[in-house]
Image 1: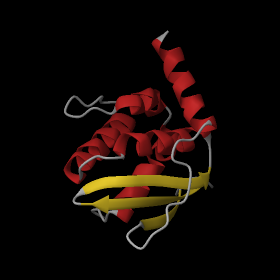
Image 2: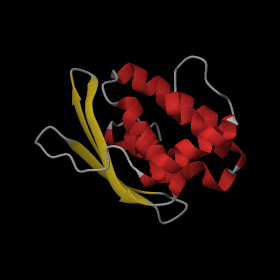
Image 3: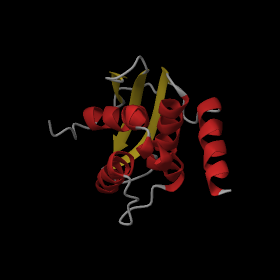
Image 4: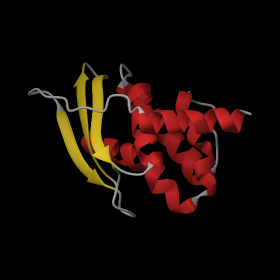
Length: 142
């Protein structure tokens, strides 16, 4: 039953994307990002004030997993302090890549994507928005 609820949540976010809009303004950062393993694309917009994500949104097209994940991510991160954002980012990466549900942070509705761990080819779909976030906030440690 829980799997069915999670599936419905992912489908709902994919069809009814939250924060699926452009943000404008001189303080808004944005980045265009393409999934390195498929044709999914998005532009992530973010407004950070006093080390807190004041607003975040995206526009783009892609599979249901990438669009649902981006929608869930924007809901989760809006109003969040940057140090907590980093914990959430790391928790999401562990959950998708290694199947570890984090206990040091609350991923909220993003837990609905836990099953993607079993679909290795879809890892970058679930992480696409988070990878764009790395780059727009310059969190990428490459």
